[in-house]
Amino acid sequence: MSTQGARVLRLWERIGFSRQILIIAVSSFVVSSILISAIILQLLDRQSQAILLASQSEISAMVARRIDNSIAQRQKLLEDFTAQLVFEEGLRPIPELQQLLDSRNALHHFFNGGLVLLDATGRSIVDSPVVEGRTGIDFSDRPHVRKARSTKATVITRPLIGRGLKSPVFVIDSPILNRRQEVIGFLFGVTRLASDNLFRQIGGEMLGQTASHMVIEPNLGLFITASQPELAMQPIQDSSFIEIINRVQAGEMTGLFRDETGARSLFTSSRLEIMDWLVIHLLPQPALFDRLQSVLLKVSGWIVVFTLLIAVSATLLLRRHLLKLQKTSIQIEAMATGRETFALLPEGSHDEIGRLNRAFNGLYRKLQRHILDLEHGSQENARLSEVMAHHFQEPVRRLHTFAERLLQRSELATDEESQLALTFIQQQSSRLSLLTRDAQRYLSLDKAHVLTTGGVDTTQVITEVMHRYRQAHPLSIEMDSNLPQVAIARDIFRELLENLVENSIRFRHTERPLRIHISAQPLPGVDRARFRVADNGSGIAPEYRQQVFELFNRLVPNSVPGTGMGLALVRRIVHSSDGGVSIEDGMDGGIAVVFDLPIER
Image (cartoon, rainbow, N blue to C red; front, side, top):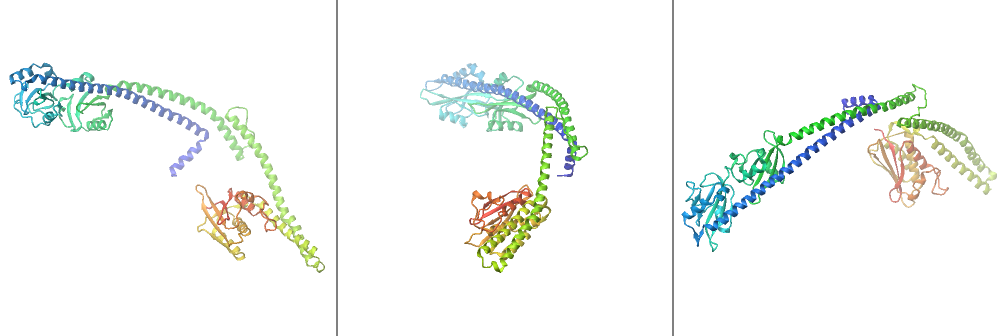
């Protein structure tokens, strides 16, 4: 942690628990209120925008349907008119054709670029209204003419530059067929894209004057037409329009965007089914959201006012209750540090402070009783340990000594019964001496004797134990490298290891050499290490692996050496260091005693 962070932490701790609760509670409330308010406002904004987008999207779809219907209507009128241009197996004479084209006011209303009639070769022979230079042009190389000739069906072209009008147009090309279904000519319906046309008329009727609309050829990147006539047949270069097209092509048919000036607008789009063009409508956001923004600002203001009122009320209420807690904590601290004599806390109130005071008083009374019991028990244990060290050992020593003297007397040398009795007394006195020693050792073990502040070199202690037992017994003791140093007394750690090694020697397998392996691994997150002392001895059945840690509990006859306290002492040492101990499977049917000890960092 940085120096600045540590300074802030110390300052925070000095504030006190009551003020911390007050600050945290009020801050949490204010922050949560702000977050909730922001979420509510955002949801209102999004919902309003969603409703508006849905409405505009429906209008856009209606525009596209009307344009599609209008184009279909123009196509049908053009196809129906072609039948009137046929006489017997060919076209009517040119004067009649000119008169027929000039007389079709409905078609002239629909096609602002006029009508053009081609003969079977694809050359224009009549146009209406007459445009200088439009007759006599060979259109046979136009793709739409070739397609109409081959399919004998009407073709709607992509935008192109008219050869006669010299301006952007799109053409509905309907083939003229005789009774034998032979193509004898073509009739064009021409729509000027830069002039007032059906796209702009329908868009203006449906969307009004506040919205701008355009028809786009996405594959060519062109404006087909737009509410701004100068955009017709111009390449799309504005990055904001390119962004809209990309979003529409990706499936996003409505949305919000920012143009190059940063102004926000709403866009809706539809696709023309007949021509696969995009109809896009733009509506500036200010025209839509000024009223919504006003409502949102009013809602925000009321939320701020209510938040402040509730925060002030919560602060006063919390402060009133936390003062009791602060007073109680100061009183307890004063008693704990000795600045005041102990006194039971008042238990009159029924709130959390009153329950806390009653719980504290109850705990103190129990603690006092436990302290008295522990002091009494500690005095008895100390007295018992002293008695065992002196008063128990002395009679046992005398029994052993006098039994040995009697065994050496000549008059008892031939008395087998006396010899047997004296030998038994000597053996049992030796066993009683060991039991007394182990019991005294067990009683003397506690944290004060086990734990130490300096680290103990476990590798060195294990090496010493290995050297001692290798000289007296045929065994192999191995250990891992880099064993951690433990924070318990050196003689205690040595005693722990000796008890485990002696236990392995006592219960070794009779048909194979004894092997012992000692390993240790640091435990994550705590300053402790888990040791494992494994052997290949005779093993212990799983149902007895907890039982063997109990005092004087032996799984073998008394004829086998031992007091039944070796593993109990091990458990006492480990528990005195706040650790745990258990037995697992060892090597080749043996056991492994696993325990954890504090380590020196």
